[in-house]
Length: 255
Image (cartoon, rainbow, N blue to C red):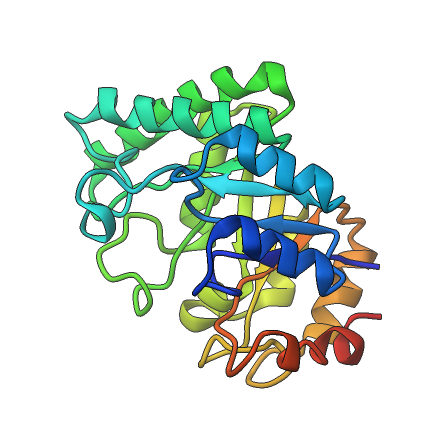
């Protein structure tokens, strides 16, 4: 049976991060994941997690000084020192909060030079994270949702993972992004099951609660069980209304 993590980058997004953790725990979640927790000291978040008996699954590296315009620095040639600084920050935060993965954001860039830079920075991240049992994950993003982002397809991500060739280098398989641009979720999950580090879900095309739209998540969850996937499945969606009012999908599609 799949384990669902609440992505509090999207859920309860209008309140402070510590309160989001509390709301997720109150709603029955046993784990959360977030994007950029850095405005709160790691020890503060660790305390909130502990007092609410809930786990932080993972977080992203920062986007860089340009924020969404940068959308990460790890594939940007000439900004390696900044990228490594963001990687170090994320790994230290993950260690302090017992998170299990760090997602390394690439940036809005393209070309062979960017690929080489990204692979070098990912190798650095894997080396830095290895002693803590933290996985480094990369996430392909839909060109519709994230125009200009470096990493767009599952196959591109797999080629980078294979080039880095580190035991803690994994794929974040976001069903929303993959369905938007590529489809064939069943085939790709089967083919790359041994590379999975995290899975995320939302409806397609509106990215709301995952009990509507194009994807049959009952099938996806059954498939993940068949494949022996032991990780978390992140509920990364924009709620239509109040989060708690929309959580009926948990009983409807999680078996």
